[in-house]
Length: 224
Image 1 (tube, rainbow, N blue to C red):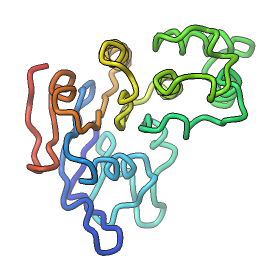
Image 2 (image 1 turned 45 degrees about the horizontal axis):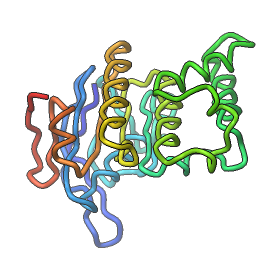
Image 3 (image 1 turned 90 degrees about the vertical axis):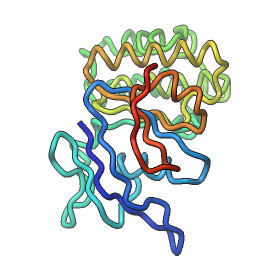
């Protein structure tokens, strides 16, 4: 469970987060909705340790993710993974997609030695991509394919929280629904939660059981 309490963050004189409080239960598909520039991505970056809040608390399973002395708890923070809106930024332009996945799998010991390529192919298949993508460089795949590669990378960690920051924006409507359905199924199997950040009200309503509305500063339940 993720608990955010009275989270505040300002950049210069601009207050971006102002007392944000919300709870993401285990196994939830939780939405964060609001217009562009309202602070949705800043919240996500705080949860991932990319941005340090000015005040407030973030708890993961009841324990703080931040402390004044040690900062962000990177060891526990790896259980939170984020798929960014711009997928190419997460991929090395000079490295084949398969090599990148295999390197990640080998470093984190996600599979037995010698089985890395097999797991990489399975990871791509899980998000609807063929094994031929393994031999491609990032510039050889479409934006939608790159987004699905990024999703596959994050799912390898079996995260407790998967953050989707406009992560399906490059997909057409039918592929978007299919990929979100796959993510929902995978996360339900592992008991993890999804935080879906979007400015698309219809999409958020369709897939999320709870939504935090940045405009209203409150959480409401839906019936997806």
